Length: 72
Image (cartoon, rainbow, N blue to C red; front, side, top):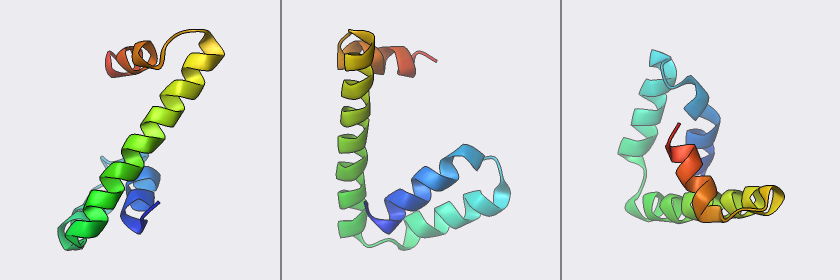
């Protein structure tokens, strides 16, 4: 996981905090294009793996898990 991805994951629960929001904006604004691209790939792989694992645990498809999460 890229440093940008780690920052997004660890700061995402406190996005309403202006200090954290400013830090995340700075990270996104100053991150090299290659790191942003890799972060998107890492996040997609993480979401896919999590949805698959949750689907396996609940005897449903990963697509249904994702739909349920996005509906919240």
